[in-house]
Length: 455
Ligand SMILES: *Cc1c(COP(=O)(O)O)cnc(C)c1O
Image (cartoon, protein in one colour):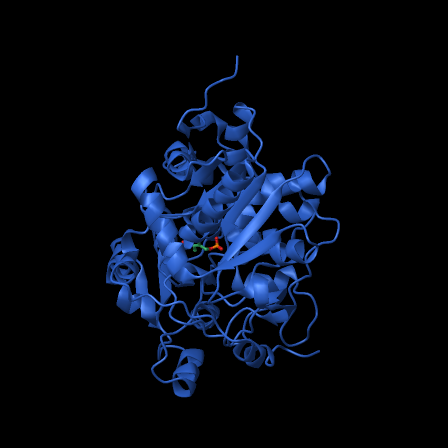
């Protein structure tokens, strides 16, 4: 007899993954290496260790180990909020009257409100192991800063956060959550760093950007004894840690013999999507199974759909290593879009390469349609989604509606990365009909791409 699928599939604590999956190790053609911004030679472990913890520098460069052990201390922390539920969206299916079967992996069940805690705790653990005093970082919408603050307080580390100025002003409560966990929060660009002062001189009154806050955080870490820099997305190490999302989702689906046809996730720097697809893409790369993968990004910051595939700076201040990725140019300043976590100008090199090889699709969506999907979802599934997560909801609904037309019974899996309690200003704009859909022109993108490094 066929097993009935429950609304929520919870793995047992004992079924929590013991190893992360390193997707690059499954790729024949690897993502291009990070390059030294001065010499253009591939970054070495020694060079990266000046910016990141040594163990994380090692993970960053490891493109051959297929699995990497999750330290027990990290697994113990995971047990406080994981395994995360995999939800069968029966209510949404019913509301849409679609024959599609929709599942989502919910990562918002922790105080930081997103998947970012999965990597924050790993990065804080390695910093602690190395005997460091603390870490610096940037945060856009505030989710990453919150996650890292929580992780640092757990291990007794100092945490200095540069928060993109618009978010700092729009989201005072986020800032206070971080301070509750003991972090020091500075709006970026700030006068406390050389790069911040330079950006403020060139763009007075700027609301800041992730690329700019990254430069400030790196400069600060490099200038302080016993500090390293931590990044919440884009890097290979972050995708590695986030593979726990996909590993759990796949294990839960496997228990019920369910195989997704389409896997959808929002993509800012690409870490939650990279983590969600990891075990599925690994099967596809080995020819064991086939899946359709869709990355969803905002039309206002369309790196995968309209950017160039080229080496670029990861930050506005050009202090970080160069990464080959789909990019809009490191000077690209996205319009005031409300999905702060999706405002990054580039995309992680692994997803960029997978997209370049045609193994993953990308779509861009406009923010009013994203908020319409968020609201539709909240009303039937109960969870109030983060604007970032709602990008995936938008495309999941679109795909389910296509199934309604064609009668196909596809199984759709999407990543619900977090909750939107700190985004009510954006929801308010949407409800008041004051939300706009700014889409950059080709000229604007070309202008920004003209500053790509040439070598
Ligand atoms: C940061 C964030 C994202 C985007 O980051 P990725 O690295 O692309 O996953 C998506 N959703 C939420 C809720 C976030 O906080």
